[in-house]
Image (cartoon, rainbow, N blue to C red):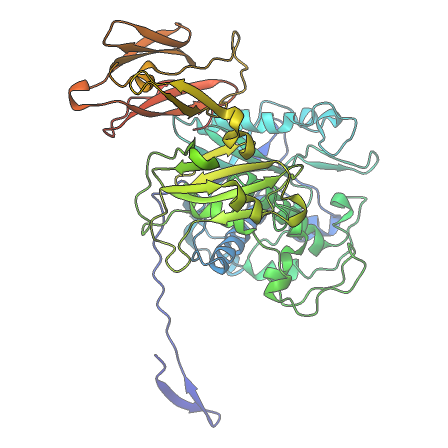
Length: 561
């Protein structure tokens, strides 16, 4: 709508209105932002004297800069999702009603608004303990490089106190990080991301924080500031932060990289999950200055093809991640499991109640995925995913580079419910050695079954390999009546009972026992199992042909499904 207005200086003038409707996605889990400090910390971060005098280096400044970095993560991620045809969906930040700080005008005209909340958390460690050289991740002789992550995990868990089954997504800024110019090491810094069930965590140091913008008006100037890094006071991280704008790239971008790990992203062959964030600035400016990293003039015109990006596989993970859901998405299926069966003719049948979204292929010695197959409808991304697919070895090998088509293939299958199943060696799954000869009492001839893949890593004391062929599979007239599960903190064993008063035990009798009766009058039988496994099998659920499911016996939250 553009009504014509009275002419101004002889030129016609028009006005336009844009109506924007914003719906807070409060039903989806947020990304929590935490500034972590030692118990005796003064709440300051590294900065050159000029910065300290101009904007300060205290806790309030750190909050504004960290908050602004998180909003840049959102803007970047939303744009990348849109370029991958998923719309501008993005994770949300936990917000609270507070004095505004996103604009310079907020200092002149104080206003209250909903903005990202920064949790201030103190650990039980002193600053000296956090800055212990033996805990510095970038110090080669250090023997405790992973301890800062563990310290942060303990402090965050104690602060949020998640309930059983609840997952918190937390990105942490380590405020007491300090550049030791004499030792040439950034102390109190760790760049790590991952999780442990109830807490998905990313941690990163504050050694580049001085270069971050504090508000929207400073974004362009922060990404074009050529001021050289003064290593008497601040770090030149990985020798890629020779100027302020490059330090902003490394700090904001590398922290986003660790937050990607928090959301389940592994390393990729390109993009944020490699080290492409050294070009993060190109998303927010049209031209970049001289680069001390490349020793060359910066990009004269920053086009979309020149920018840093989230890899397509990262965007697929985000599309089905609970933090990225939209109200318009179909209800999430509680069953996120993926089932895999070897069938005749060397094929593999894959099923998933929430649908199969994509698979990733790894040739032998590949550290990152270089080939994948998507099962999304490209013309309707909201269409249901296929619940059943058939994989053939020839099809999978054709997707690999020509020089690797004869190598071992690892396949990772992802469901629309964030479930995952890994086939470590596809050839072994469909090989003749995987076939089991079964003598059928009903038909008097031989049939063949297929061995399933190994679950868990057999780390529980007393673990031993076992195989079992159910009597009811060999002789359908031998009805299975009930199943008894033995489990405590983890799964111990399962016993199958038949109508002729015999039973078969898989595993051992231990822990407490629970019985699951089958409705034989309706012809009910076991179709499969849902398992949670990690170092050992944590829990097991029985699934029948009538769609009935038992509870998860054992630990329903242990391992992964």
